Length: 258
Length: 282
Image (cartoon, rainbow over all chains, first blue to last red):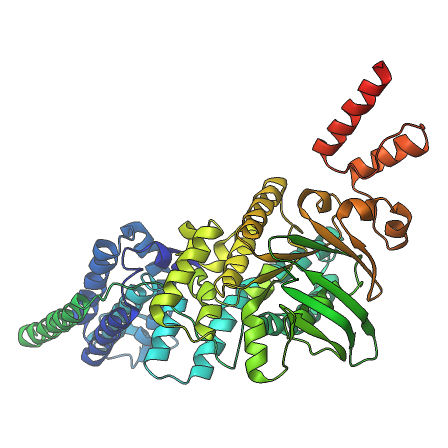
């Protein structure tokens, strides 16, 4: 998990996750509600500044992480942008194909631009959380927000054992490949099926052992733990307000100008 | 002083009818390391789960400081607080992706206040030498580091009896010596330590007392040296002498040298060889 690794190195790692969640969610909701090009870009840049400035994540890393959703966004927005028009319509750019024009006009460009920039802004806001808060802190924070404990504990266990199971699956796969299990498409399919069933059985047995280990440490129905010390991070609430203020100011300025 | 923990005529039969423990009687004293030797399937793990109350014996009882353990909720909580198990695979034990939180689990379960939990977590991290790993995710640790984190998660409950199941399995040589050092320190701090192992070379290095377990029964008890004097019994139970004791055994049997087969460590063998050389020159 790429983001998790950076989250553990972030300067905000030891800050209380609740204000980080608040800042990220506030920026996301405002950006989503405004649905404007300016606000989207402002959110993206603002969050980038917080991630690199406050969190200490290198700019190049932030940009690399942005490039992942960017590919999806470009494809998604391109399909929104291109429409078919009657031959005599006013368009910005189009190709005549089969008696109709295929391209886009000003309104379509504005709509696609709005979606693109809003989505990019939201991605930036989510990355602020993802690149500063490890999953365990986030689940702990969900518990504090009164999300049902069962759900939170399941999330924590699933997260922990994803790594154990991928490691197991990796070992089995290597063992299969070393005995030519993936030489042809047919063999690959067969080996993959075996791998899936073995991983399932191992997980089953592991669950028994994990339960015994929990019981031996006094497990009584709840996975209560104490997190390391957090810095309170109340300043982030102010920062969240300021960010929302800037977003709304950009929105208002954009309205006035256009 | 009597043993910190005792098993008296302990029997355990699994639901499928497998008889895993058959009238096992043994004890472990404070300030000593007790080895439980046995091949795979000898009943070591079942014994440990019985000693800690995860499994309930079919017959017989577990005694702490001479007092039988009650099998009600309070008695079991007390038993689990005083007897800690470190499992063979740390991935079975570490359930949280956050090292600090995983270590805190046992202490939180004891219902201690926050300050006391923090004090104990710090102490356990320091004793196992992993204070610098507190901010790391569990999946980023090496096997040896995970093992130490698992031990810290048990030490945090400040048990009087510490049980380790195959503690050196999967560790590299420096990991093994680091772990032995740690276990030695815990013993010297007055803990009763039980180690299950079939790594025979380990036994003379760390165990003060030893029991040989086979097919769910105690077959021999004594100091490790006493057990090494009966190599046939060890071999019948899919074990062997430690390498150095084996060398002494061969010197004695095949070469007719008067070597003590119980000299199982480098130090003991050196003393023995020097003694033999001196006798030779006389």
